[in-house]
Length: 480
Ligand code: AMP
Ligand code: ZN
Image (cartoon, rainbow, N blue to C red; front, side, top):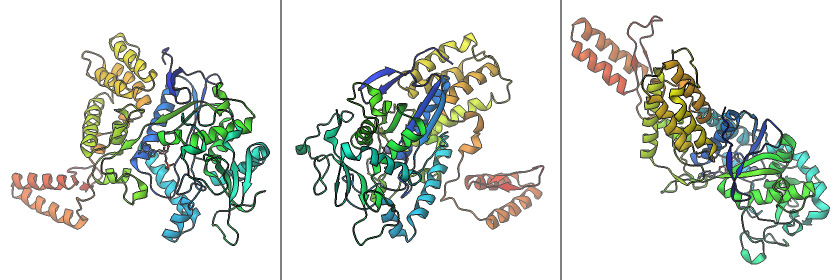
C-alpha cells in the first residue's frame, strides 16, 4: 500500500531497524500470551492491542501475516524463580475445579476480550498440547546445556554466549536478580523440567526422562515458536517485563537448540526482531490480577465504556511509552471515538471512490509515515481525523481512504454506530415489567394529548437504557 519502509525498534539491538522479512512476502509473529489461571486485566490486553496493530501494519504493507498468541495453561509458577506453586493448580485448588476447567474457562474469556478489541489473531496454541515436543527439545539440549537436580532439569546459562543481552543484565551470581533453587549453578539458571516431588501427584504431570513432572514456563514459547513459525521467524513480542527474564531464557534455549553462537547475528535468537510494549499503569495499583481486584475489560463495559474506547486509548499512546490509566482518560478516548464514528456514519452509504485522490494525499502520506515510524499510532489517528474533516471531497473518496486507515488502526469504524457506543451502565437496572408499566402510562398520556408527559417518560426511559420504538415494522415497542 505504501513505499515507506517499515521501521521497528528491536529490543535485542536497542535500535530502530528496517523490517526485512525472513520469507519474502510473509511476516511471522509470535506473541507471548496469557497464563489462563484468571481473568486478564486491561494492562495485559494492551500487549495484544499492540501486537495486533503491528500485525495489521504488516498486512497493510502487503505481507501475508501469521500471528500466533500462545496460551500458557501449565508451568507458570507464582514466582519467577522456579519456586512456588503452578498458578493453574493453585487457582484450581482455590476454586475447587480441575486445572483443565480453569484453563478452558479463562481462555474463553480471554478470547472474548480479544474479539471485543478487534484483535485478529485466531491462532492460540496451548502449552499442554506441546509437552511431547518440549520433552524432545529438552532431550536435545540436555547433555550440553543442562544439569539435573532433585527438583528438576535446569538450564545452565553459562553454556550459551551473550546470555541476558536482551535484558542488558550481567549474569554473575552477585546480581541477585533471581533467587536460587538449592543447587543451581548460576543465579539465572532456570527450569526446563520440574519434577513432581516424591510422594506427590500433580493434576498436570507427564512422564519424561527426568521423571514425572511438568515443563518449565520458558520452554513452551521456544517450542511453539519453532514448531509453528520456524526459526528464525520475524518478530517476537511481549510486555516489557518479559525483556528481563522470560525472553532472555527463551533466547538461551533457542541458541542451545539451534547450536548457534553469539547474538551478533540476531537470527541466532530464534526471532530477528524482539519487540516489547510498555506497561499500562494505574496509580492505585488495582490492575494487578494478583492483588485480588481486577481492572478488566468487562468492568469497563459495566461502567458504560465501549471496549473499543480502550483500544482507542492504547492507540493514542506510543506502545513503548508507559500509559497511565484513568477513567477520565478513557472517557476522553470514548468521546473521540464517538466523534469519529459520527463523521464516518455520513460516509457509509457512499459508493467506494478512488483512495488515491490528490485531495487526501497529504493525510495518506502523514498516516503512512507515522505507522511506518515504529508504529506511531498517535499521529496516524490525527491523520485520519484530518482526512475526515477535509472539505469538498466526494464522500466515496473519503470512505475509501478512511477504510484503508482503519484497517491498520482496527477500530472497525464502518461497523460501529452511535448506538453501539451508548452502553447502558450495569448499575442502571430496570425490569421488563417496569418498562411495560411506563409505556402504558405513556400511551395514556398520548391519548390525553399530554405530549410533555409522554416525552418526559420517553426521555427518562432513555436514560435507563431503554429505546422506545414507535412504529417499528416488526412491532417491537422497546429494546434495551
Ligand atoms: P501474563 O499473563 O502475566 O503472562 O501477561 C500477559 C502479557 O501481558 C505479557 O506479555 C505481559 O508482559 C503483559 N503485561 C502484563 N502486565 C501488563 C501491563 N500492566 N501493561 C501492559 N502489558 C502487561
Ligand atoms: Zn512467552
